[in-house]
Length: 363
Image (cartoon, rainbow, N blue to C red; front, side, top):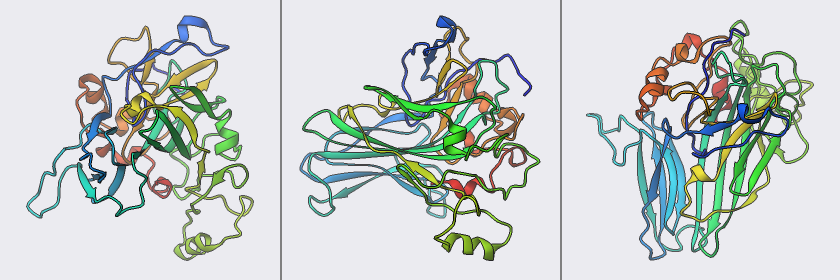
């Protein structure tokens, strides 16, 4: 890969946090220390309003494209993370629909939905894109994953449980990469080797090279452990695709699938219901003796340089191999420079991005 002398700045996720981190074991001391910066946060804190009378509030994210996503359900005060550009009220077009993302609070009377009193559930999903080097080419496709988290708890104590799901999308690195997340209780490794665990152990770049056909399937591991799968192979012929979708005896030897995901057992954590998600989950990779968090930069790097990892709380598509990220997303550089709450991922150069087959891997 062609390397450029940029370090990393910030892109806060549905789940990352502004604090320092220490070098990992086997690293090279202070030279690999990074700090997580929140200046360029892609999310912001949002207080879910509750009435305190046992009624349940549900925070629903409405997207401009018509999609909806439930971000939280609670009957107690709750802080969640929402995309930084989201409006608190819908902005109407002449046709009656909103032309911007907005949050709607839906109220349920006590007992009308199956929900334990004094409890909360807060959910979020992100597209994670990592660089694997302190001196990278910043195409942000060294590791691309879709992740989803669900945090459940109650108001009796600070105890909660965090469940993580991971969908493998692309691997554009020759390095051995480990992937995990942290909360207030420490480090939780999800894979010590993402190529082996998430990508069938296939050699070479996976879903990053522009000369590969867009119908090529994303290989994922089938069976064993806590893995659950919900996906299918993308093929040229629609009839064959429908057959693959309905075939319950498929195996990786016959045809790899797209959209498979790994659901990990819930992890207990000591976080109160009012804790900000960004202080609860921090995604990272370990590679070549370094540990790089989403939203992190080298401590010595000047403000305004590029991040090691991005976590984008909307559908986003990774760039082709050796394509600088700002060539795929023209608004990316201005976001880095200003930190303004703009949905730059909504403006992409399609000829520089994978998107046709990756659509099938979305949640």
